[in-house]
Image 1 (cartoon, rainbow, N blue to C red):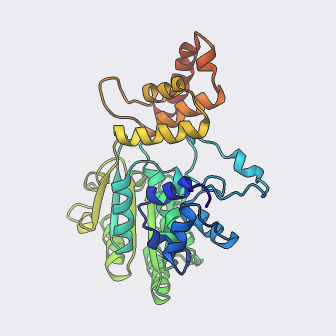
Image 2 (spheres, one colour):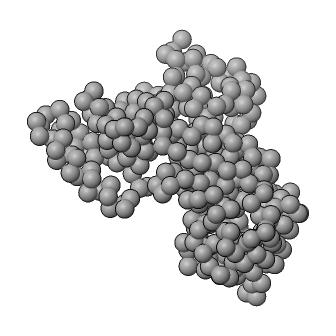
Image 3 (cartoon, rainbow, N blue to C red):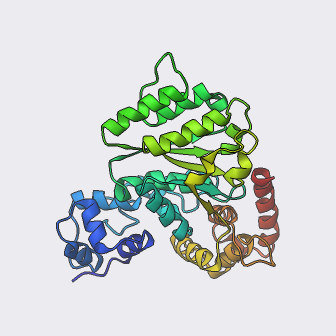
Length: 346
């Protein structure tokens, strides 16, 4: 009997999956196999290793699925431990937000719409991309997910918005694009194929600020959620009733959403992030202390910002172990941290 694969077990538990659910997701006939793999009794075949990596959004190395006799892919070694101002490329990099993640997945599975709100740089876009990454395993192939950035120049008009939405959902864009009518026809094609369209709209304030997006736009979009199973996932700084109230007074558009308010990490979330990331980066206790100190929103609050944690870890990784060797390192670290952080927040 081999050594238990704690990496594999932790990856499953972090996503809140049972062994039976993992077996179903990867097409394994028996959940006993999942238990045997996690306990080191047997080793999954290459086929199931690929399935596990796709489900958890991790590399074979990160799941403990590299055997001694196998070559190590150099790309595994190039994956950064900390992702500062980078897109979410793997679902496993999404820390904290467990309740919000499960609510978003559950509502999407039930074809219900969700509003994600919170201050800038709190992780709204990452939560949307997490849904896209996790969807194949948790929602299945029936769900067609598209992502729109409200800051895009094409989203300055209703016709441009509709064309972008069609494109992101994998639908053709006709030359005579008729705005929401074109989008409605496209959604009808998906419904006929028993597919569920999910449209993630980021930076929704940029759309709502434009006069062309009137009451008719919001009511038309809402109608598609009820007649064509369109699922909306909208990210904005403020609640939707404040964001679009100027152009959609009296509209029932807001009534279809559940609001998810993203806040800084709690102590528990921060502890998991710091422990796992420090282990992966090979940090010393002193360097872990930097994560606790500089990842914190302020000295008076028990709250840690994901962006600050990622930046702190990135700088420490680049200067690995300098904090331990150089007496004046913290001063130079603090200056460098503030310069980078201020440039992306203010």
